Length: 141
Image (cartoon, rainbow, N blue to C red; front, side, top):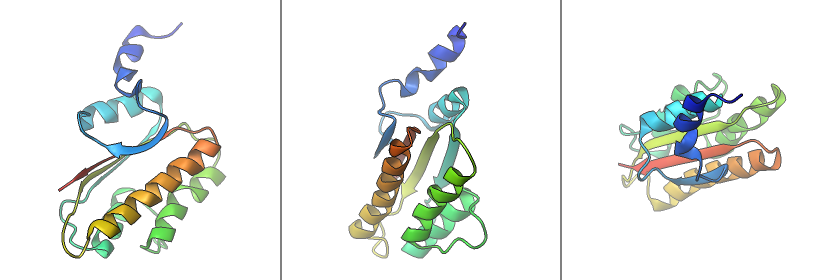
């Protein structure tokens, strides 16, 4: 029998498609963390407030997501770390990812921000093909 408390706590993701990249908007960080935990999914969080450039953003994501030391700190390597090694390690329960305070600095312009979000959209598609939920929420600084 399902635990009613668990059902109540999981409602924060009930109306969020399982494979999507979207602005965090009305979602609270702690609610997303709790929902991931209650669903038994991985919770990945990166605070990017101190990043000024693409290199900074990729460095902070790699560090805060605990990527391996050989992580190449480019968009292709980011995609690879979000997909291939995790897929090869066995069945995955799902992911709730938060990219908090993506910079809007001149060295990380609109095009760079879109490229970053495209990597996460591609990862969401990758996991959708494998029937694994991958929800990514983001905010801008």
